[in-house]
Length: 328
Image (tube, rainbow, N blue to C red; front, side, top):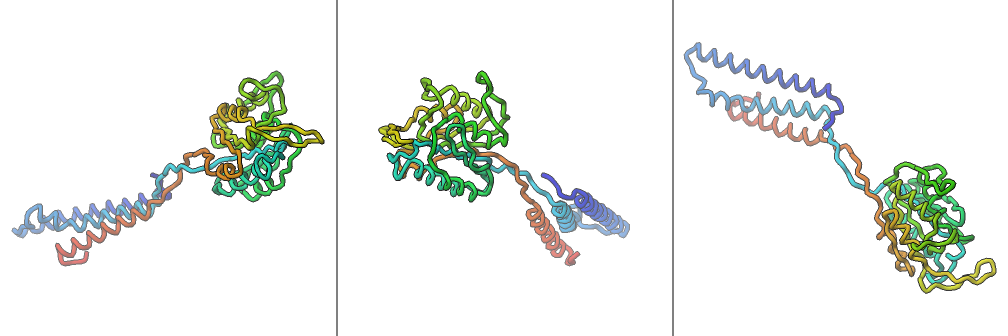
């Protein structure tokens, strides 16, 4: 428990101690005077009962001294907070219509629903990724800014999942995050309250895929996120049966690569969310768990101490009246 003004507490307790000392002195003088006159106070029990009201009153004054000092307790509170980066795939394959009206349109709608569902204490940023990654909006508590960035997104270019992760980490740390020469992974610190929500069909044009479905660059980027304590929740937009899209005049077959997205989420401790149709995408906002952080918040206790003081003072007044017939 903490006190806003310990000096007031000290003064109040000194007053209560003074009253207690005075009560004891008066009681002893009264007992001595009665003894000198050959009278009795009715036994020690009777004397203590007579002083009961006084002691309740003094206790009330002491508790009131604590109340005016502004006591407060530090209470741990769990709440969703921190930073969320929506990494949006805007590659040409996202124009596919196997998710109506298109993968990108459905993903944008899901992202907007996700933003609207978040509390004000969550900062949201948007990263639109093609090859090289493109930051669209820095994380901020102004969710309208993130929503506007999502609405502006248009499909173009190819996909690099690794670059998407690095661009998202750059937005979280507010500094450029890149894999060094020879595959060296940078130390970006620890960001346990940050989460990346990656919406993509998993189609990766950055390099040859490994057995996990991802390329070396993506594996390295996911490893950087994992060491920094950043979870990546992946959302698979598309169907495994796939469809054909026209990109730069070429007809290309595209299908959901769930293996690549699952690999990313598993590496970072996140979760993969399949979304093969618009209805599944609509439920993404409720299925993604944000990081819970425990923060200490002050809980004022003055009201409780004032209530206790009033009870003690009232009890003291009642006992004084019933035992002595006097108010004080």
